[in-house]
Amino acid sequence: MKKLGLIVLVMVIFISCKEDKKSIEKNNEEITTTYISFGDKITSENYLSKGQMYDKFKSLKKGDTLAVKFASKINKSCKKKGCWMRLDLGNNEESLVRFKDYGFFVPLNSKDREVIVSGKAYLDVVTVAQLRHYAEDEGLSKEEINKITEDEVTFAVESNGVLMKQ
Image (cartoon, rainbow, N blue to C red; front, top):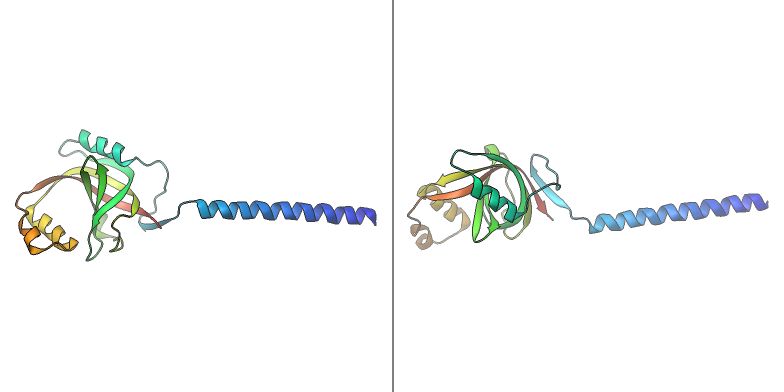
């Protein structure tokens, strides 16, 4: 009888330890950052910072493309469809991100959200007509839109996947 009691006691201790481990794992999951995924499935590992991405852009020449994955904050986004966003690169610079084949969109209220973007980086010339279209999508006034009078060379990304912090 003593052996049976000892076996039951050991089993209870073993099960209790196992449950504590699960609750610790659950707590770790709560601490872990969770993301909403858009487009192709990408991971939240091995990405560049916005400063590192800025340096990569500065090294590009017209016609160059570079496969990248970087993290940043959304400064602006399309408020009509979620079909583009401008990401902070530091140094008062931004990257214009559009989505491959118009295949996915981000939420309309994405401004100030943290994201990880994967795609193809390149230098692009955005025409006055396109810039005015983006300004309209952003909800700017006619006055502000009419102030756009020159094409803009921009750091561009054609994104195939985005992770957005929840």
